[in-house]
Image 1: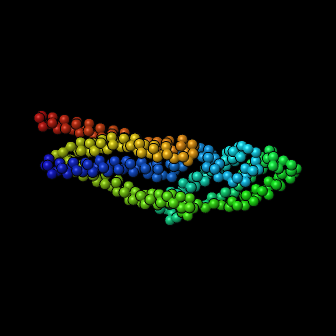
Image 2: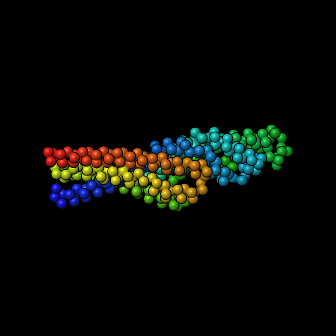
Image 3: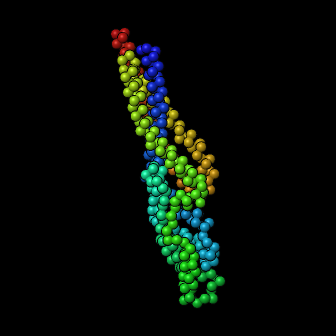
Length: 307
């Protein structure tokens, strides 16, 4: 085999290593973090009741607490959220679909309309029961038959300030935190690149494999030139999850959203990275198999030469 042909094969083997490694990472991302169905499945393990309890407990109007005994609000909120858990999970799934439609370019704008009527009704019933069963001292002098009217009147004023539907869109997120839309738009742009790069990686990998086979099939040893980059690619991919966790763990440690989220997020990352292990083991096995075939092939060629 000429030096030029050997150099060309070596260069194609290097390109094959790059494309295989990139394909393994891209395919894993497409099947996990870029897949709304995967994300929704992972969210089933999130304690959404505890998460919402932590978030909403800091946003309850002070007026509500005045009508309940001390500690009753937390108990009432737990009951309401437990009752609304199916609704919460439904809204969460809808939000995931909405966000991913925007990220993948299937929707030009980000808009999610949430019907909060079930929440208002559940809160009203639970608070009324607690208020009538344990009225605060400030209204203890009121006859029992008038307590319900008092609650309905007071709650109607509070509830009237809350719309029946709530829309989450670009403007809402910008008001909450401008960085949210900046990051979403950045992710949308990267996913746009991804939709071009992913099929290009598949095509390039196939071309590199065919090129190596064509250049080395006569005087060379195709299994050797294919096995080396595949084996190295598998080894590299095997260590990628540890590298990613090295950077994500400090970020997660710095978040203070909710204990429920702190428990769920590391498991989500582990599940997202798990397919990489499978890819790496598969590539390593294929690479080793090809190298064994290459060794057997070379041994037979030597036997034929000296025979």
